Amino acid sequence: QPVVLLATPDLLTSTPVPTLALTAMDADGLRAALDAAWANDWERVVDDGFGAVANQSVLDFIEYGGFLYASTYNTTGGQVYRSHDGQTWAQVGSDGLGDVFNTYLNAMEVFNGRLYLGAGGAFSPANPDPGAELWSCQVCDGSDWHEHIAQKRFGTPPNLGVNALLVYGGRLYAFAGGPDGSNLWSTADGTTWQREAEAGFGYAANTHAYYN
Image (tube, rainbow, N blue to C red; front, side):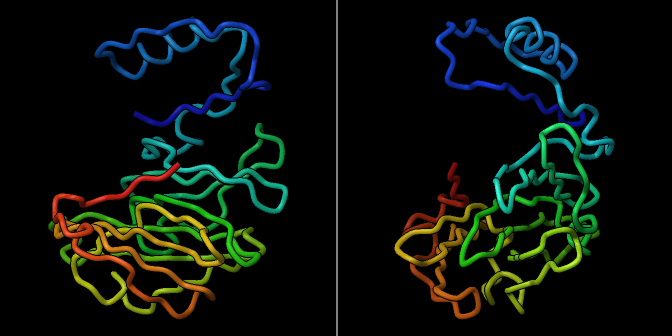
């Protein structure tokens, strides 16, 4: 089912938010439940996956340069959209940033005056060699996406996607997940990277890291 995006003018409201009990339901049922629960607070600003039904979820939001950016999971290549008012959205960049197997555009972060985006995919018969990718832009209108990782996966085969990005202590940290456990990398300039942890921090079942 395509993603639906809702917005509220005031998230920190003094009005009690209605309790919503969610049970197993299809996408239409969930939409109806959300509409009923937050009828007075939320406005639907995107429906039907930004016009692309293969956009099944929004994976991250971030504000950069006066725009709100949203990245998606899309079965034919993840997409990035931006809006200056939360109402009108435009895609910035091609599907999967030129690689249709980049189905997950997982994480975004602002670092050193640029917007960074982590991407990845999954094993499939059509994509037997997936790998993590990291991109950035400065203008971010779709014209200046730059790939920072020359070799997918940071040169390490288990890294299938960049799952989370975080700035800390003047460095950008990237969590790259895979079946052999997450790897944590960092950089001070976006070009030279060093590994801070590997193999799921010693526990291979730690395959992904999530930060919000």
